[in-house]
Length: 316
Image (cartoon, rainbow, N blue to C red; front, top):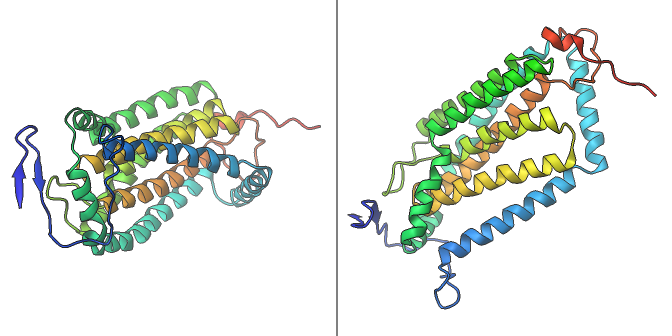
């Protein structure tokens, strides 16, 4: 049953009366002075921030360096038979198909878990809508809106194309990466929405997977990736800061979509997995198409453009 909240014009629903598997505590603290919805956000930020720092510290150990070197050597060996653009295209198509194959069954599972997980969490947040807090999150949710992320992708592609040109790299690489990255998110989302077809909460039309969560991870993640390649290649501190920034933007978007009742919880989980996989594919394509400036040319690679003029690597 739907009703209008006279203060905001938003639809609300009491949902099915059956109990779900998830039972959430009140979480209001200090006698209700700090509402549970705010407590959840604070804890969420602390957990994501701590996990980001710990994860980056772990993967940037000496062993991780060796693994990356091994991957780089394998990449260069493969590149002796095909060009870097060919490698990137093959990875892009394989990644596109793999994300659809992986996220499709997750969407079917999310549909099955709707009454067990989604409705209890939906009702919990529905009962904790706070005037000024709600107004804030209805503004912040726009960081993942299509028009804004399209503009960010276009601006990022143009800006880094100029930077790449001035630094002696292939100027078209950022334009290709940012445009195809946005296209990857858009068309995979359409495919998953069509094949899963799970419906949406009674308050909005948001469905599986959360496009906002996927967009902020891929679009803002590519901005961070480009900055790291340009200014801080291989820098541990830079990568840590970049990961924390992406995790922070995702936290804002995911919490906004959840608190505003724009998506089911499992939609947000699906969008997060989708976005993470999409960013991994696009960041790897970016790295393939943008070899380090001090990397010597490898026999068989058709470097093209001014990459052929890369400085030779210093020897001891």
